[in-house]
Image 1: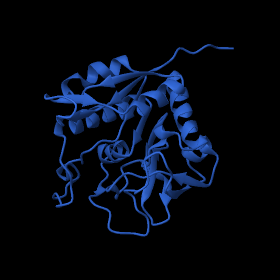
Image 2: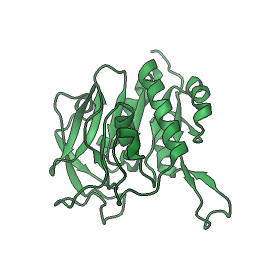
Image 3: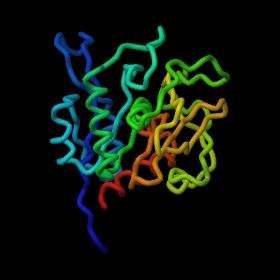
Image 4: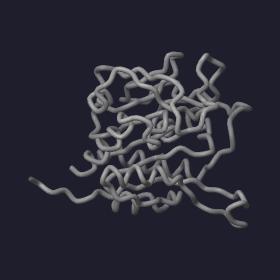
Length: 237
């Protein structure tokens, strides 16, 4: 039996200035992003948001995890004016993530985008976003704790995601006020909520290019675990 080395997974991280942690600016990432990679047999490596270092990071890592964060992508990037509901922007992080996402597309390196990371993948592929989801019967900023499920997603039976989870629908958590609007070039929808909000995107021509709008790193279901296992497996090849 062939023995694979543990792949190194680059993880994008948040920039913060909340003084409850430090009087000075800091980088941070939730532990469950790290643990989800470790539990799937990968080695996590945090990537500070330095666009000028994107090529160097890219050459070190075997796969990329783009995490969510407390910021929005500048709508100028996808040709729209900023609406009032758009939260603060993180220009260095957005530039860094777009650069490394485009490298992943060009070099066919596995990449997984979660929540804001999915939105970034879509924008990097020339797609656009709903800047603020209008009120629907689903609360996409769920009142429940993030480690609890709140609504269902339906999986496209022809998608790579369905091959991974082998389930038509299941319940997920939800923590976002934006979503994919126009799907990016060469991408397809793999999951959708009952109110029509796009919950997942993927590329058919790429080894592993997957966007997930919910937060599978909380491992609410076995389907979430399967997503990480498939991601790490793709990074080993």
